[in-house]
Image (cartoon, rainbow, N blue to C red; front, side, top):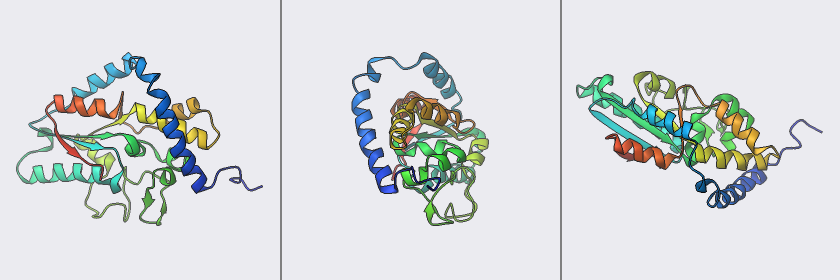
Length: 224
């Protein structure tokens, strides 16, 4: 037997993911929502939102990877505001990674281990195959349309804020765990341990969208 013979085929895996996600969503609708969100998670997230600064503020709502456009548009926001006289210190762009957008928040190790490229239908433009690395964090070669576009890591150093939906992490890690015959709790822990530096876990993406607008951020849908 070859090392990967025990794993399901791509079609089986994606089919199982879709069915499992639907089942899990049905389950949490009557259980998880009946229990208040973890107070520590909420408090950490509320504190994190205090970092929003400057005169010009925008939120990119990213429920889909959308070829990296939540990242690209954040760069465009900073680039064009700089060109019209506003320094980075007077700007805040926030990207809320939710639903199918959550792999953008995670490190290369998880992309390879859990086949995020296949699961979330994200191709590496340099290989024309499902991505086994986070192509948005430190873009290489053909990852982005122009080489001058900053990746996620550089944008963070300029003040762009990224958060990821805990509810989506729970649902999708559970679905992927089921498809790979793994323990859902262990997979969720692994995903959380592989969240990129500086990315804040929030109770849900829609919770974060609301908080950002309360903080004066203009809204831009970045899902496609």
